[in-house]
Image (cartoon, rainbow, N blue to C red):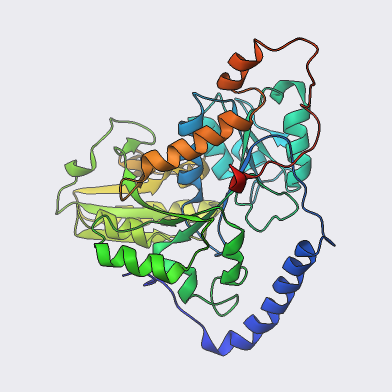
Length: 390
């Protein structure tokens, strides 16, 4: 059921109260204009959450890339969590994962025609993407994990809420997993309940819709996870998930925030799943590799080792994996799917907004062909684009 992964450390609630004071003060400083939020004259779509841990940000950003790439030139700007570099880095075809982080590396690998950049200072990163010649064709910027980065005022603010960790049932850090009070959801234009069970009942939708208590200007969507074929990491051929036998032993290797939904989904195919879990964004060591080898060796046949796309980015260049592991290791790509037949509504809203507000989009270029050459050029003038007014 919804919220079933939430665990509250009651004894830490006093610390959560103190933490909440600091967060509320920071938000109030932005509301009063003492701390400044900057607007830009290019569509900026922020995808983030107010919960520590995975809520499905990367699959949703990838969904937006697929949705927009045939209509506009897309750029993704991320912090580049746990990367070894500093400052602004624009990913190229040969940029190593350690310089940009595992999630940006995954997106650049899957979408090579998309500009992917990292910068802890998001305002500076946007300036670089729009001001540099090699990325000046950018029509829309997707901000990855930037809901709390309030120095940027996004055109569209998308808040992701994990079905299994609904913010309405959670508490602030450190007692719970909330980065800020749930009232922060008021900044979102779109709220998406992610990782929903595929068999949700109508009553469950109604309960969540009522409990989220959104404002009239906000729209609520529901998504679930879908999996592609298992893809070999080193050798072999793709396998459909249904090729996994009920008696096949699976070593599920993950370094993500919450593998529970993945475990639950794979139980449909096999009843023998052994999780081998590491922290989110974990940098694998030689000791970890040996642990993987030994865990897989100890499992009876038939057996398979499955990992995530994000872990693949950190494992692929590692030495020491046994031949047995390499011959039986697959990554499981994941996509999101909208529920309640909401996909067309979401797509039209996002595409229409980007086409209407982008300077370079295909639609706008066609219109601009008929304008006088001495027309006003506002490409580099800072302005406000309001999603709520469109």
